[in-house]
Amino acid sequence: MLTWYVHLYVGEKVKRQVRRTMRRINRRKPTPGVYLLTLPRNRKNVMEIVSTSVLLQETAHMRCPQVIGIAGGKDEAFALMQIILKDTYANTGNFQVEAYLNLRKA
Image (cartoon, rainbow, N blue to C red):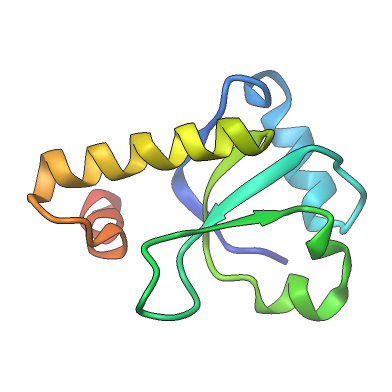
């Protein structure tokens, strides 16, 4: 099962059915057009955008980093990424998303 951020960023297109969509993703059911924003697997990236179609594979599903956002489409995923980066910079003065999200969790 995936690790979901407590204060998940949610795009407008999936807002009405976010819990249902999350359940489908956790059960590895197809959710076409849905993209997840995750923490990076390496330190060079700030975030990653992952299509849920990739997560149908068991190994990809198990290795997926913490999910911090969910969007209905690639354009919405990029817009959500901008929102997260703006929030991070406004509150910390840098773009260290993981550190900001850990502060926000507390």
